[in-house]
Length: 230
Image (cartoon, rainbow, N blue to C red; front, side, top):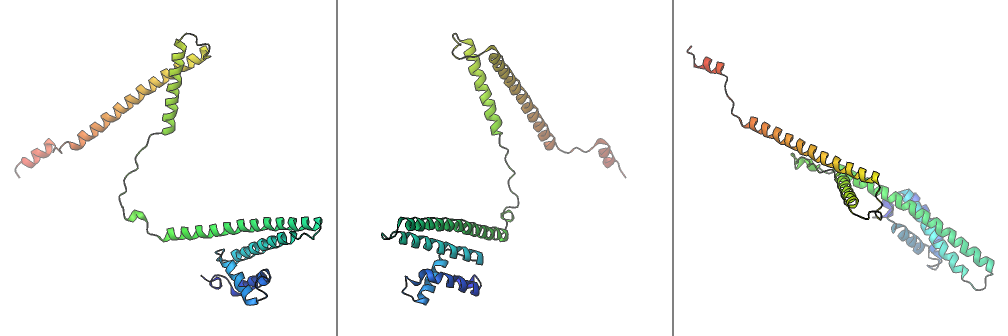
């Protein structure tokens, strides 16, 4: 896609004109060739707005300026102070180039994200193809399971160590042994409570299923009224 179809022609002409001196020497003073080179360089940055175009032009100017300063600093006839100044200038230009590059990347990312969001908003909802989605399946609480398993393992190790001889190396005090015993007792109580709740839930489900399968029986009074002659 041409840059002229994305930005205002006057702004594009201004930016390319400012970049012409960067390429004019390399094309032997050919103004048209320099403008074409500047346009190709800007198009390589995939810009679509005036702000992105300006940042791309600054990246190009700073980058080629840094290269030019480094090239001049290689002249062996230059004094040391001039060499240091040129290399410091190149370093500063390079930092400015990277700042502009980050800003341009952020603008392009925002633009592409907005385009994707708009496309998703216009796309048909997948719910229309599946009007009766399956209900979500309950999954166990993984952190709670991991915590319970950790407590079980700690209690088991504590009880085993407390029953062995020479537990001084393990360093388990009386308070820790009691804590481990309490953990084991709490876990047993929790298991029993969980089993009781599961049994109650199974009984309730069985009762509901029995009620739903029972045939509908007409009351005795209604039967007698229907059987009596008019």
